[in-house]
Length: 327
Image (cartoon, rainbow, N blue to C red; front, side, top):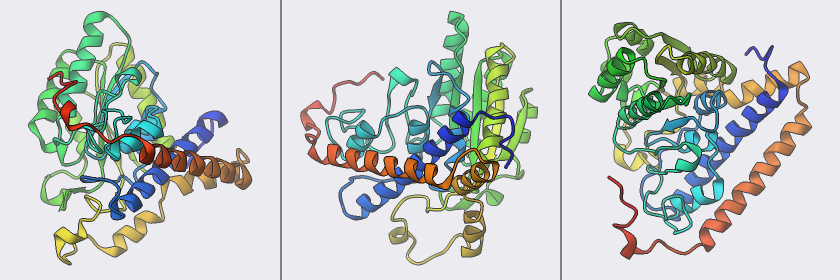
């Protein structure tokens, strides 16, 4: 991992963001198995470098769309732990008053246009957001986060085509974690690199190590600058791997069947994005082990505060199920 040329404040901030995402998802996994969190939970443990690197290259006014595995995107864009945790608990103090849950968090005030449980559905929303920026003459950039499975959806291809034709300020970020639910990409795509599809639409297609937050940041920074300058979209493929299953608790659905090897998982864990950055920081003298430990300690306190806040908040009111609808 090359950290040369990147400010210490940025690097330490990215460490904090990745560690916050990791601990948030580890904690909600525990809470899910304790029966505290209703509905499904999809964890992105192991993929923290992608949202962190991309969102670190964005301005506060830029916008993102997320997907069913979106806790990391929300935290990286500035989402707060208290309302996020309350939303997962189904409480009225959550981002969506407890009605959205894990897969549908929205905060328009910080440019989060919504997580989405429909595969690929956020891609045209981000494209439309980019069109709005272009029509109003604003320099805002929109980002669509999606997985390798969504890259085979029509929404991706239609959005990519229009974005390229109209030179929209949008970045398509494919988090290629090798599996769409339980199907390996080799069985769903004839090409192993999603990035090469950018050529078909006349936009740059860039593949990076999705477990190297600095590489993701540099690629995203270039794509953002290109979009803001009016040069159009970029397809950024971040190759990574999810440590958890498609959904927390999937073992009950699979009935003992394995769809990936323990050896592959072990190899990817050796490339942990958080540990890689921590090692690089310490080796470069940019941060000490004690400084990073202090960051970890503060995150734990913030996380437990969020859990307490959620548990003490009022349950969502069923009578409000059809309020706040806008589409």
